[in-house]
Length: 142
Image (cartoon, rainbow, N blue to C red):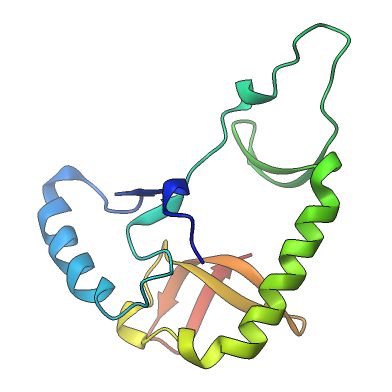
């Protein structure tokens, strides 16, 4: 189930010139999604780095850097929460193994920016669609 407090709309709508048409398209496509999923145009909120600022100079937060796109765009896992992360990933895998047929995305809704669950090396993972080529090849960022 999606925590709607963690989502924000308008994440992938493009320039302001095309926003009206994008909104119209999103509402039409989003009607086909189940209520408990992140839809087109929604995204997971970010956690600001200053949230991890230590109270004093002797404190630190151990993290694992898991993906880097640039010095200001990267993903980490908090080392003290790694067990909870693995438990969440196992729960995600078990959920989609059981309910995958309920969450199949119609081809018309396959759009860049859409948050998805994708099977990778026989395990379900979180992903974001990066590119769609004639609906026969979908590029997903895992």
